[in-house]
Each structure stands twice: as C-alpha cells, then as structure tokens.
Length: 104
Image 1 (cartoon, helix red, strand yellow):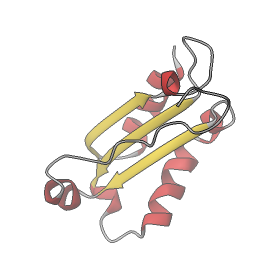
Image 2 (cartoon, rainbow, N blue to C red):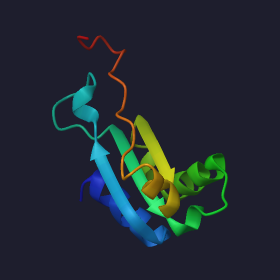
Image 3 (cartoon, one colour):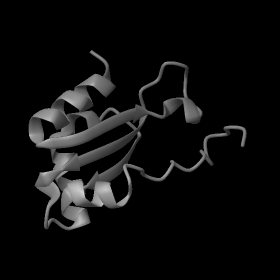
Image 4 (spheres, helix red, strand yellow):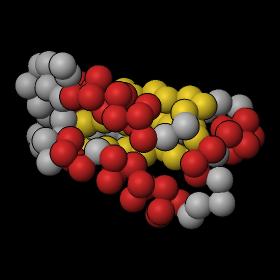
C-alpha cells in the first residue's frame, strides 16, 4: 500500500469527508523518482465547522501521526463545506521547490 493511499484511507476514516484530494508532489522536489516524500492534501469536512485553522491542522496531523514520521512535507488545505464553496472548489498551487539543489 502506498503512503498516498494510506493517507487517503486514514483521513476518510477520521473525518466526515465532503471532498478529499491527496496529491504526491514529490516529483517537484529533488528526490528519487517514485518517492513519496511531499504531499498536498485538500480536505473538506463538516468536522472543521467553527474550528480554528491551527486546530484543523492538528486534527489532521493527529490522524496521520505515523505517516508524518515517514514524509518530509505535508501541505494542508483544511476547509469547511462553505469555505470550499466560496473558493469555487479551488486551492492555491504549491510553490516551486527552492531547495536541495533542484534546478529552478
């Protein structure tokens, strides 16, 4: 089972999901081909209603505690259904890699 699929499964089990997108962005960084080290997670859940952003991230981090020991970076977009609607189902792109000797 890939780390990406474990992340998807754990988040689906931990939250009432309205939308979930887990993207392996490792290819954008100076890592070996096929690596699973950098992820972008967009999660829309009613569980985030009336919850501060830092608490939302802590909830996700708690659900993925084991995986966070194995990966280098996790970009989180934690949204309520209303926030997702207000953004018309869009989140910002991840920035380009600036480290590790990757050509920019």
